[in-house]
Length: 116
Image (cartoon, rainbow, N blue to C red; front, side, top):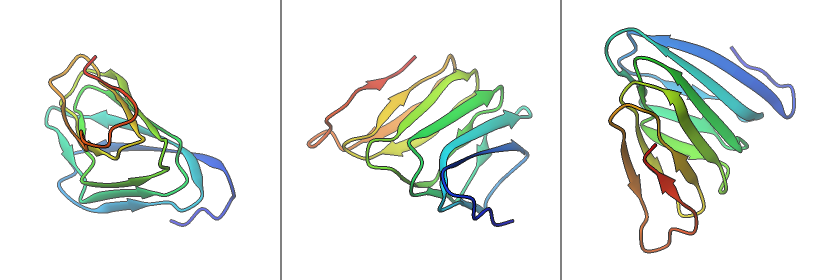
């Protein structure tokens, strides 16, 4: 699936995912719903224009290699599952109620990482 609409919102649901890369070069918002009982695992999430990545649901997601806007906000506050993300220096992470693992470039971090 390729969505060539500029500045759109993309929503997708994950359940039982153990690999694969999601790519959308035009989305400015990506909404991820995580279902199931085990953490979903992406090899990567590439949404270079995404300023907002919202994660909800019970299963959680490992985002793999994350490519998003330099000032993206990864908001997992609506998630009760385990989420795993690596954020760049200007990106912000907001955790949910699950046990999240966030790797940040501490030496250059310019915004907050909030564990939820």
